[in-house]
Amino acid sequence: MHKYFIWLIVLSYLAAALLPQFGLWIRKVEFGGAATPLGDIKLNLPPLMLAALLFNAGLGVSLKELRNARHKAGMIFAGLFANVAAPLSMILAISATMTFWHSPEETQQLLVGVALVAAMPIAGASTAWAQNASGSLVLSLGLVLATTLLSPLTTPLVLHSVGLLTTGDYSEDLHELASGEAMSFLGAWVILPSLAGIACRALLGDLRFAQMLPYVKVLNFLVLILLNYSNATLVLPQVVSAPDGDFLLIVALIVCLLCIAGFGGGYLLSRVMNANRADTASLMFGLGMNNNGSGLVLASVALADHPQVMLPIIFYNLVQHLFASTVDNGLMRLRGSVVGREK
Image (cartoon, rainbow, N blue to C red; front, side, top):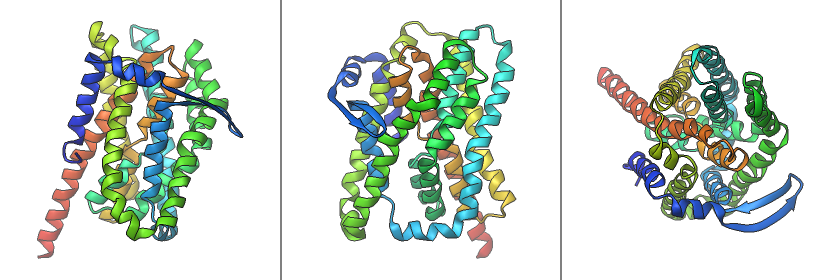
């Protein structure tokens, strides 16, 4: 499943476009609601699936490895800053360039979708890519946890900033999200499940977790594919039935440029900080990969009246794994050449 993961994601999007009925039913499943200090929370299936993913990500955090992260504090804080600054700079450039686009409505949809990509914490999947590339797992875990725990501060900052670049309903929606809904969403469905997973890992111990790991991985794959499928059913059927070729093309182009800025920003930061190859890998995967599952669920819940804003998030979710695969191959070749010179 790991080997063919990117193709499974593609198949989930094809299923969403051609067979959306089951995904739309998933979105309607409710389990009531709950009053929490974060506000009233509706217990829908997509946020619960997201919480399961973040809980499993927390299970993967070893406290021993986490304690070692203090040795990487400088790179973690630099990565945290770059994770906000790089996409915001890119969005500013996109906003200036898109003033020449023929459809102001499409420009707003693109900016809001890209804002939700940029506002999300670093994806837990970045740790798996970094580990496969012999990167620093300690640095990867530190980046994921730092951006996740600080997301109630960084996410409103990004959303408010992009809200100043947008107009009308789109600007109002971004400011409303930044003022409360995004923070309660992140607290309930991202931060709390992550912390619960970390606590459970501490109780289980490394040996029991190692025994559970294969089942956790399979569950993660299944939930992630189902979550992508159900969220994509809100927009992809309309894309297939009435395709807007130029909008799809500009979304794909902008998303690729944003992805290049993320992975490239990680590489430039590693050069500035004289990072070794392992830390370079972790910085590149960390800054290039965002938790788009959270962005998709948030958009589908809070911006259901503007489903087109999910297109950039869907594209980025696919493109970031394609770029990660390319970077992984490049790092493998680099490691091979270094080993060859050492011999």
